[in-house]
Amino acid sequence: MTVREKLYEGKAKILYATDDPDVLLTYFKDDATAFNAQKRGSIRGKGAINCAITSHLFQKLEAVGIPTHFIRQVGGQEMQVRAVKIVPLEVVVRNIAAGSLCRETGLPVGKVLPQPLVEFYYKNDALGDPLLTRDRLFLLELATPEQVDWLRSQALQINNILSAFFQDCGITLVDFKLEFGLDHQGQLILADEISPDTCRLWDQAEDDPTRRVMDKDRFRHDLGDVESAYQQVLQRVLSSR
Ligand code: TMP
Ligand code: ASP
Image 1 (tube, helix red, strand yellow):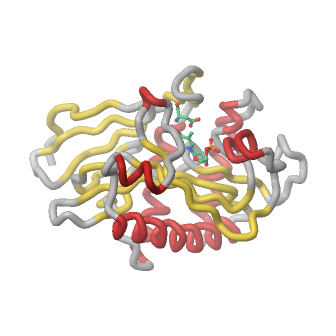
Image 2 (cartoon, rainbow, N blue to C red):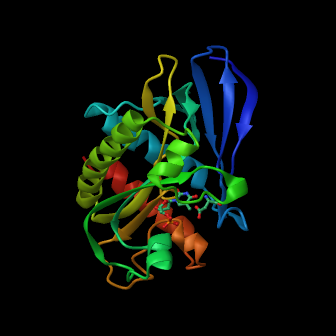
């Protein structure tokens, strides 16, 4: 497969065309940003780690019937994916209160939610990815009611699968963000990545609120040992069933 022109460069990944119009190449960068790119840096080895974790998790999901854009991992930090049109929604699932949920509602960090919370954010850097209401989502014609119902049920199903998987790794899946795209048939499929950049992952062997963090919060809040936390997630993910 021949790699062609760069189609899009985001904060953490670059998307290339290939000689097959149905296949794109995602390159995972070591660059890290937070707070809508107000904080910038680099995490050594992140591209390769996130590519490997995403590839592993997408294969796990595919194996239990969740359609994804994943085709195969190629090279150290590249993944072949099916071409999709990304829906400008960030679908966030939360099991435990953290991050913006605590900041915006006053819920204490670590509070176990009575049931998983599914939220839709508008994927729009210029606006700072605002939280959407259902009515605003329809007003902006970001998805149909049927698509929203499907996204919600798909996100909850993915949460069940990933929560159980991370549990086996000794990791609590606190919350995570998903993106979906429309394929050539107009079908919604899971796209983008699932990695320590897009999940909150807490080490069950650690009680200390700083030491337990195994995800991008280490970078966001300058907690140190970012690379080794990402490495540790990769090791546990690859050695789990
Ligand atoms: P939040 O608590 O900051 O809203 O984040 C919720 C989850 O979404 C958390 O696992 C991190 C992830 N996330 C992204 O993947 N990209 C983003 O731009 C943001 C703000 C959060
Ligand atoms: N990825 C987002 C950004 O840079 C936010 C985050 O993950 O905190 O800006």
